[in-house]
Length: 357
Image 1: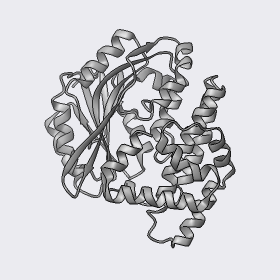
Image 2: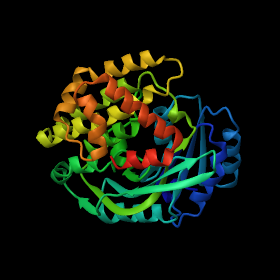
Image 3: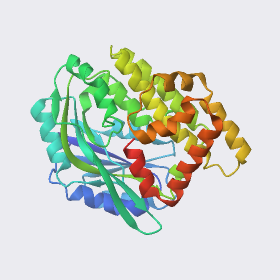
């Protein structure tokens, strides 16, 4: 396939994803849009992902494979960006699903509007491994719109982030020349938040964005029993870092007003719920140690400042944050234990509560 015919580069990171590769290829080959290349980046897989990808690439010239030592999401997607030759670029997680017309519609929109980025709505899905049951929870959309100037982007910046539509890269198509000209890269050291970091950088450099409220991407939010359930000792520090970087982002965009401050504090406050629940995934800590860990989180000065300014919208989030707001460690422990129990025994209910926070 000649480089001149490539309109869209699709970057697909793969790490031990052998069981999903066939489904991913089927999603791609049934696309109505054909002027694309697919760049699979094998991030040091220890299963047979690499061999499967090589066989696929041998049979289809649209598919390329990069093999690299394991380095995580940032280095994997950067490797794809370094290889991409398309006019536009997007990302795909190999275990997700696509509407057959997603890339035709997205490329047509970015061409028609001459935008730097286009974004579509998407569906959340939770896969229950124990029962082989897929549960579609809800869709996440943003009203169809075209912001053709920096001022229009700034005017709608808070609502874009508040809708959660800017938290991911796989429901977007980006202009590749802007990424290259501005030397935009994925940054290391941002576990869980790397997509948001990349989008913040892109927003700080782009001139126009188009949105379609049509849902064209199906995102597997979590496979129950997967590594996303494991305890991370650094989870609070990750969210604290993101809180501070969001403040810098809004300042860089020239949108550091009271509304922006409230949003950033509310976003961080709602992430605290995840930090508390994460502690209960530890199999090493005693209940007393978990209590002390929770106390250290809610006593942190940045948490105190954020919960004071935040105005959580949903009743359930206000209820959860109440003991945090009043600096009550025991109440927060009880609430965190309850959320952990719901997640463990009724993951569908957990994600419905989470998505509607």
